[in-house]
Image (cartoon, rainbow, N blue to C red; front, side, top):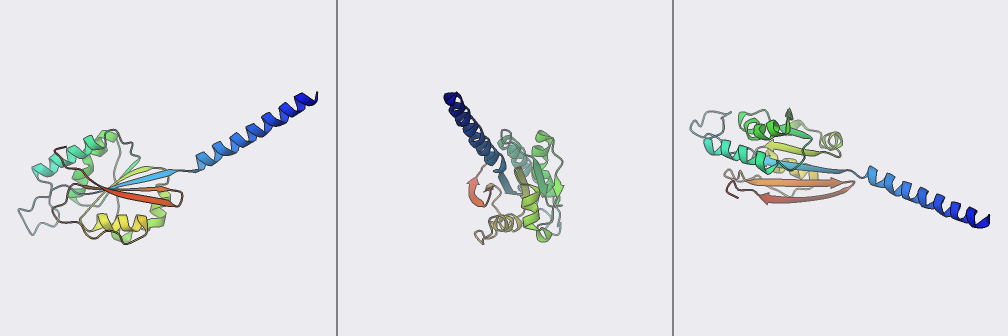
Length: 175
């Protein structure tokens, strides 16, 4: 009888300990933000403030969709410009995601992070807004504006609880 009680106590303790461990794993949510600058824009009319992408830009946009093919995405954000929307359109079509328009200058970054907790998010911006958004996400001034010719940089910001990591990848079309 005592052996049965001891075994029952040990099994109960293991069950409780395993249950607490599983619960703590479920509370840890990894959030990943992928940030890109729009693809190559048409510069033929310097007065055009909202140009479309060039043929090379459209090629890069299509390449982004193949790049993100195996990466799960839950949400896609873009500024309200032709070039940023055209850049992420192939990805959105592939993933069947309707992009959300965001204003980088009017974003509450803590609310944005909270809204996207546990998700994989793609954000399409500009040479100044993309690094600024990364700086907001990582809560430090790490990156300056991008070169106007840089359409291949991919910023990846991972947030797990209060731990934040980031990297910059170069993603040329001809990989």
